[in-house]
Image (cartoon, rainbow, N blue to C red; front, side, top):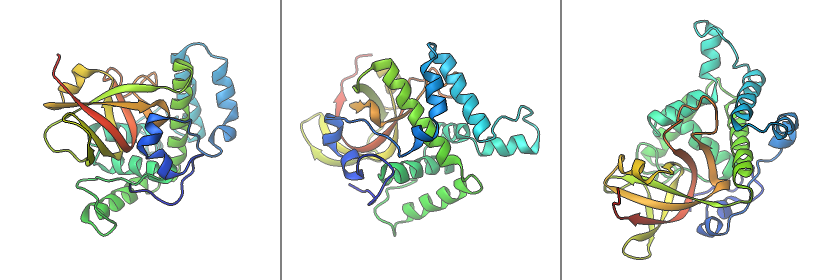
Length: 264
């Protein structure tokens, strides 16, 4: 598996990206993020409504990273939007191989230690054209937005906080992904006629609705994902750009996937 030597998590990259981790999940924590934002998480503990917690989180990031300009036509407001985590989520939603997609993949690489395997082409090595494209897009996307990784750190930790409140203990969620023919995923092992172990890109979109997955391809795969490897989901924020899509952004690595028969 393609990984870096270091990350900012409580577990090493080779563990996080392994199939064994997915089958025996453990909590993941980014070093120092909750401690540095203790006030926010203590405040969230006192709020019963998830929608209200989402608004408090959104307001906290807006103030902390100066994203709270109300007049969207001013230069400062446009700059704030360019620096906002919402821009990168929207960019991913439009095209995961975009500049914004490269920045999100870069966050996974730097925080989890799992390198991307695909960006406008398969990344076969650091000398490949796809890797060069990834580096260039990452640089363009991160330019003058040096706080974006800190914003994404908080987004991940808040996502984990909400999943913990919703589900209690660490669990696996059943998610689906529609594809057409060959995909960007590397097949590691053909387990059975309909089961494979694949190496997913370091960040991948899934849905929790099987019917929705069929809208994206003639082949649908089912996967079990630990909640600790969910970076974002569509109901997380009150004004989520993905609301209603049933979409989950999943941290990649090696997964057992099963091709399902059409039942819709």
